[in-house]
Image (cartoon, rainbow, N blue to C red):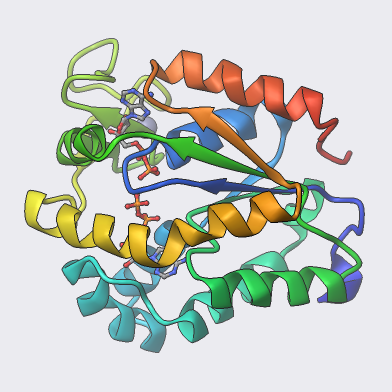
Length: 231
Ligand code: ADP
Ligand code: ADP
Ligand code: ZN
């Protein structure tokens, strides 16, 4: 894998609780800057759907709102990072989520002659997070994210991006599971904010504003930090 990775390829991390807008913003950054979004949640859902051994092991943990083991998540991410399309630079959406994952990421990147570029912490309060998760749905064809109140398709029932007419909701986007996910976030993931702050890599972006306001905050960070995708 080391040969396949462009050493200069930037690595951006989006940190934030469930519903903060990581996926929404990662897709926008992908379009604007040409980075590739790597969502461990999406990868795990694909593994669950394909009933791979990793998917079978992860399914009940995800359903309960817990964190899947570092071992499973890392093996899935390693395989994904070995693919050629990640050479332009990646946005890690939902990874790392534990201190162990952060350490393993450093090791993996160091081995490839890379390092974490900038870590953006999307800050939302717990109440907003519950509302965002509860109203979330996505296009079944292209994965574009929508929300019952905050982001409706321009034409009701038709995806803005691909024209698809089928939408789906995640089984873990319930009020009960949201509480467990938030707890896991505060206990295991939020400490990474201090970790990356100490390394001088952290920037906090207020994620309570509109999707476009958050996106412009993120673009400003990327310009300030001089992060750009590789040709
Ligand atoms: P959210 O939109 O809530 O941030 P994700 O789609 O990123 O959720 O993840 C959904 C679920 O997949 C998580 O609740 C967790 O069970 C599992 N998961 C995703 N990424 C990781 C990770 N890096 N480490 C452990 N579990 C993960
Ligand atoms: P995450 O990947 O962090 O779990 P998502 O990007 O999936 O979060 O966003 C969660 C839900 O909230 C989606 O339904 C999305 O359309 C909506 N959403 C995202 N960002 C905002 C925002 N700034 N204001 C209002 N709703 C938002
Ligand atoms: Zn679509």
